Image 1 (cartoon, one colour):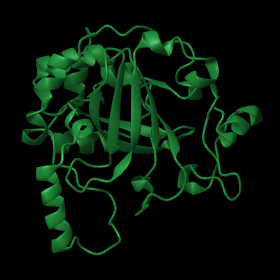
Image 2: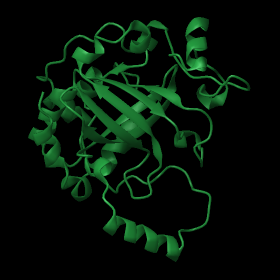
Image 3: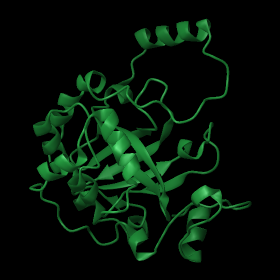
Image 4: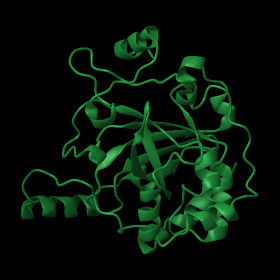
Length: 268
């Protein structure tokens, strides 16, 4: 799988066609950036190198939901770095503007690597087949031919996603504990209002994209992924205090007591 030529195409298009149309969801407490801080920022941009940031080569826009809470849905803006043919990593924001809130991270691996994971680890990962084939995952700014080729590489990969700033729940700061996120796997799961709003901002037609991707080959989802569909849900929980990531912050979703103990102790 060769990603680099496709990813390189996206670099000049991140600003030209694929960004700055989705503002952050929540206000930010604190004073406005001072002139002194702005000067320091400008100087740092000119004088310091940023190899990890400069390695980001693609922008993907899709949707996540809280593992165990399919009603807790949000749009996720992924800025992706290719590490090799089998591993990618993405920084996830709640918008695509300069002041976007950093929501979390996603690690993306090939089907080959996913199949080598132990059973308990596989429960943390979700498939990308439906996201690609449904047209709900897009690469804004890429020409249609290049986007389709990129999606042909992503369709059989698997992702592990943690969100640390829950701006969809009006969290004006990164409060609470991280939440494990999942991707959609079938029709009728994604809130159509979210999809409609995304299509409006990006001037895209998800149904047309779906039709164009019908010939992308998607292999059956590997065993162990999307464990939530079998009722095996993993979510962090506080050792003391109320549970964190149920809808409206009222319900906790977990797995077996044994798995919860592993997560709480850091042995998962």
